[in-house]
Length: 82
View (cartoon, rainbow, N blue to C red):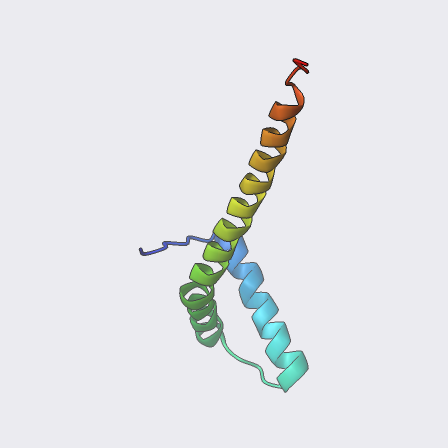
């Protein structure tokens, strides 16, 4: 499965600014726009599928917990027949 993540221009700009600031503050390197865009693309290509899969796992767990709650609530509706 190919995950096609598209970021808005504002999101890309913000990420590039954060990458630029990180490199400048942490490494003392002033990287250019081409390197910034390359890193944004790398992160999207490599991290997006991992984060996407984690989000699916989290959603599945949340749904499973809600179904368990609903199942127990269902049986609480039973009337005593004794």
